[in-house]
Image (spheres, rainbow, N blue to C red):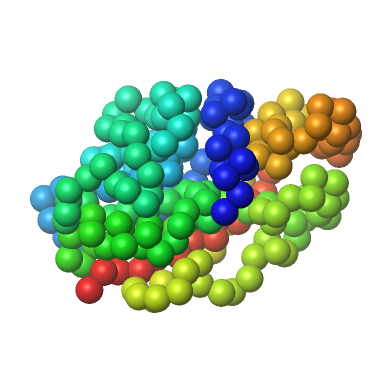
Amino acid sequence: MDIGRACSFGSVAQTYDRARASYPREAVEWVLERVPAGAGMRVLDLGAGTGRLSAVLLGMGVEVVAVEPDDEMRALVPPGAKALAGTAERLPLPDGCVDAVVVGQAWHWFDQGQALSEVRRALRPGGVLGLLWNVFDDRVPWVTELTTAAAAEDRLSAVDDEPPYDGEPVPERRQFTHRQAMTRDLLVDNLASRSRTVLMAPAARDDLLRRVRNLAPADAFELPWVCDTWRAQKA
């Protein structure tokens, strides 16, 4: 894990929250459909960032605990969620306290062995781990140009079929297409909120964002995404 990149988001928290895509409800429903039926559902949004995934869960009527280490990101988590400081490697939660753990755009930042151990500890029997990544749908020609110019790692053509971790429980996968209402300014903000961009030298960053602006359609448009989604159920 690149610690510098992992810790870079707080400086652009407001931009991140404004410009990043949400997650399709269908993907979240698919993750949670394996959770055993009960009177209610308590879900941990792990590495919650500004709470983009928490907001989807709250809209589904789910009780949400959001764990995020960065103070500036965590401050933007929707107030309906219980926001806690903590990491995937050391969850501030007791054993067997949640029905599901979901991770949006963050699993690759964790020590996966430690994170899996903590997830298993926090999950109730039959609980579910869901991992979600929004990636640019670069099957669309102008999006291919965009991802090439930005050297974007999160693009559909770069996604492989390997599970996101080794070990049990073995995850299964589905992909969900969705679109984000977008403008040139918002697209520039989206790229500006990425760790790779944040850590660039100012001149290089300015040049990149200028190229992104020139590639975007002039009028309001929809940006195509694919939500690459994995789920696994604890025995």
